[in-house]
Length: 461
Ligand code: AMP
Ligand code: ZN
Image (cartoon, rainbow, N blue to C red):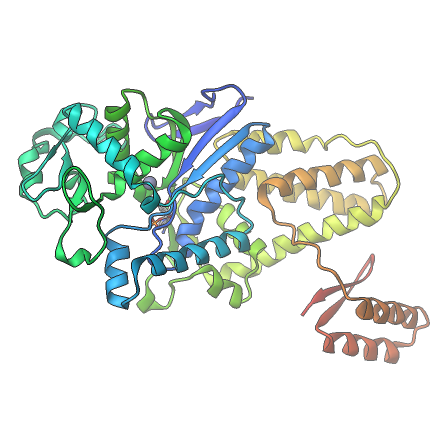
């Protein structure tokens, strides 16, 4: 079966065919670095990570670009409020963002262009738009995109602008308003911008947010590329405006497939600092979540469905991740260093098909966990062949290349290993008192002993 993705612009699942055979060019809207990214942002970044990992599994060469928005109204406001130079502020939160990406095992993009390092590309694009009659300079020196000059405006979100398509309103409006009528390309400098300004043919100012993504995606991926992603809140006006700017400036179609993930809600509502349910990745790791449990929770709901996050989801996620570690351990010790020819278990085909169907992660995970259940059963009743064991390990390996839910292997210190061996000996000799004492000793060193049918296992406390 071919891969099908739901395309926001056509509202249909479409067969995915890249522009250039065997290669995929992907642009994903990155964070606005005025604060630490929250778990909702990471829902979007993890959905994009899964998409990319799946396309890599399918054998495509990927080029992935994610922008860093390091100048806009929010960054300027925060830098003034906190009395920190804007560059220092955005650098701090960009670093925090990269730390969280690593914590969640998100594959790095090929490029992370920062808006402030690409002002000249944006100015060039705005010039083209003015020359083509798609943009004009207003009285305050700002430059606006004229939506009247682009009849296809609204095609992404299927909005009919009818009578509202008047540029008169745009000119008379406050320049800071973020809606289609305020479709600003270049914002003339105002006092509240402080020293954040660049020279341009239209005077001192700074670019609007939308032009940033059009200019940088064109610079790194070309005028026309395969997939553009973001959360649903990016659809309008951000992505609608990107399409208008890019198609008018380059004269080419912009993006083939638009993919958007739904909102992450917390406890059924919006995250809010006052309710104490505004979570950042670091908070959640402190509360006992692991990178794997977070990945599991964020990927276990289909990306086009609203995801309701709550702290109570941790228990189920812990169990799911533990089941994966356990089957991996069991199969590894079952196969040992014996050689066995390995294909994939039959279910692997269905697993890939589920993902080919617009990234149906709940179905893919259900198939995987059902396979674990059956494999455990066969191990228990001694009916698994060596070949089945080896092909099972191959399946886990491919599964993990997409979901990355297997905790990294943790080195157990030699002292702990030797105490563990002593304890095994004590248990063989039915010396339960010594066995318990050794368990306590190991615990004091920060390790928890768990007795399993395959012998004692150790994990950090
Ligand atoms: P921002 O830093 O606001 O520019 O957002 C970065 C990414 O996170 C964008 O793709 C947004 O669409 C996405 N995003 C923001 N909030 C949420 C949320 N609550 N649920 C899902 N995605 C979100
Ligand atoms: Zn963007």
